[in-house]
Image (cartoon, rainbow, N blue to C red):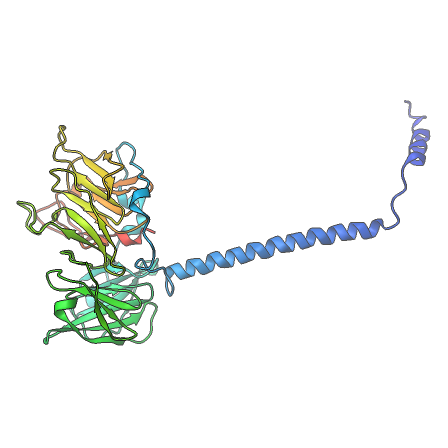
Length: 398
């Protein structure tokens, strides 16, 4: 085709074209409106989803956080164990940076501060000795807010999804229990005379206080709404509930050479002091070091032919036995946190639900260490490598 043929070709093609529909403008407008409605609908759905996620997140951060006592634990028989990979492992504080609590140089009244437990994602509960007081510490703003408890006693603080509880022992002897809303408000007394022989060791939920005697005998429930105290049948334990709803039933005598030190006797069963549920633990032959979460147990195998002896993780019923690549050292501790619990084992913090593991650090293996179920603490000591006060708050792992 030449340039002279082009006009004739265009005229012929135009004559052959199909005429557009009479309502073309209406069709285009209708399609535009349809696309706009779909965009608006998607935007509304996204907004609703975002609001739902935000509501869930706000409920988790306080004033509605799920209560671990009311949250069913996974069945021990179906727990999927994820072993850690080979070392060397990163620092646990690098793997979970939220656990490393650093306090500012200026603390209330220039007093020594003791970190107790997480309140929510950005606040931790701390106490001072001189003068005595309880504070909420904001780890982001690095500020302290004093809690208005008038009667200060070291017998215990407990944090539930919506309250901070404080118990004061009186000479009778009885416990007086007070609580304060997590995010501020008025302190109220919820129990005036709980018998100490029933509530020396105690745990709290939003609705009740649970306890046992000084030696762990028996289990009792005090209902805050009704003021009634009832016995929980079938629960006889030797462990302090502390910050956990699960308590361990152990052998009558500690293993030789440990006293009541870092490694307690192996767990025989776990008891839920809220529901009364009992979970028996299958103890391998000859094991003297074993700690359990509500789903799994970690132990040191004394029969291992290799040196150092091997650590293993297994389900409560003994199934799923899996070797762990950690050297013998620092003992075993279980934290009832996360889907399957977290374990301090062989100088490493290990999450069997994900297989992640982080090292405590070789320099800290020679330091004095404290543990209370939600934290690990190293105190300064001139006779050890530890020169600073380090606190890892394990319950900040979400």
